Length: 256
Image (cartoon, rainbow, N blue to C red; front, side):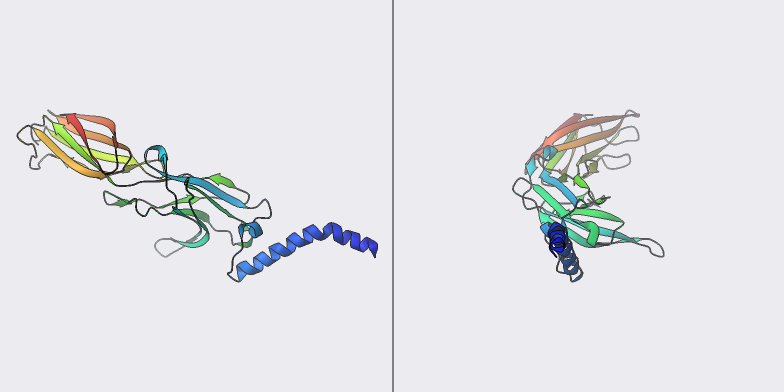
């Protein structure tokens, strides 16, 4: 009898953890969920951490930013497929902009992939008719620890493009300016296209041979300006960057 008790004492921690996992599974099936401590008892736990920032190089933290991790499953269709999402974990960034999402995938059906969603509310998401996707798709295997920084763009700066010495639109003289900025994926997202005197359009050149246009761009970070121009039939490109503060109209000047 004593031997049986000794074995039970040795196996008790394993039995206790097994009972906790079983209880957690029952709660998940009942739709009540589990705490992170209950759900992450083993090395299979998936952890996604990061920082939410805005401005140049995401230097300014965005406390309270809402971040969600969704399980995504591809649903085939007759003409096209769709993606069905279900919430896995959600959290809000702390005062330093840091967030952590953590869960145990063993009690959930394996999705096709995971989708990290974040709230860009208050920062703007429309650029030149393009809606920036507020998510990032991830492949996360059990036991994965991954860092995913998030950059939010605040569309609250005005950039004025001023081209001097423009002789007027013609078949041999024209210019088009593209304004872009870094979005949350680290790529360039096209901002408001500034069209200035394309061939065949009415000239906007004023008395001082100036032509200009103003567009909205990302605040507290650099706007990337590309000027495509044809001068006397010769096509050239000019690339430059200019810092655009929040709530201030910044002027970029280029001599045609």
